[in-house]
Amino acid sequence: MDAELFPRARTEPAPGAAHLPDWLDPDRQRDLLAACRDWARPPAGLRTVHTPGGGTMTARQVCLGWHWYPYGYARTVVDGDGSPVKPFPRRLGDLAREAVRDAFGTTAPPYDIALINFYDGDARMGMHRDGDEKTDAPVVSLSLGDTCLFRFGNTETRTRPYTDVELRSGDLFVFGGPARLAYHGVPKVYPGTAPPELGLNGRLNITLRVGGL
Image (cartoon, rainbow, N blue to C red; front, side):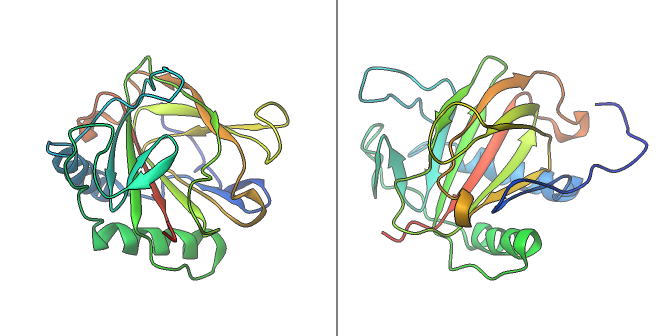
């Protein structure tokens, strides 16, 4: 992306949802990317997710703390190599609580789940809700690498009304309260838009949740 005359402003696409552009500075982005590369290594590493209906998610995923599979949580990679899930790092919990504080000015309970999705240029994510947790704590979403079109919808249907938000490397998106169970997805990734100095081809999305499990 070309440099812009004015910084991008914070927006609230829906009550309970906040987009904070450029929340992670370049140093924090590089540090988080290096950690994601370590977490993605086997065992319990990056995997392709298959849905019960026989579908395949185009974004690949690795989990920390609890292993998510469609549609539940386990302590082992039940739909992969069977290894114990990697522990949830304290640094991500601290990052999540900082994000909620910056987004809403409130405190959050301890976070214990990370879903890290890797998108290449052809990957997408259909409209879905993060509804397998037993808590209404806000979901924290961090973006690294290529820009994507993020579609944030409503709590009743996968269709309109929804708001399309451009998420770039370093952006933060948090949703909770009345937006906690809103449908959302990624209909498009824009290849080649990652900051060159980051050294990432593709997009990483780090989603942090409180499981209440």
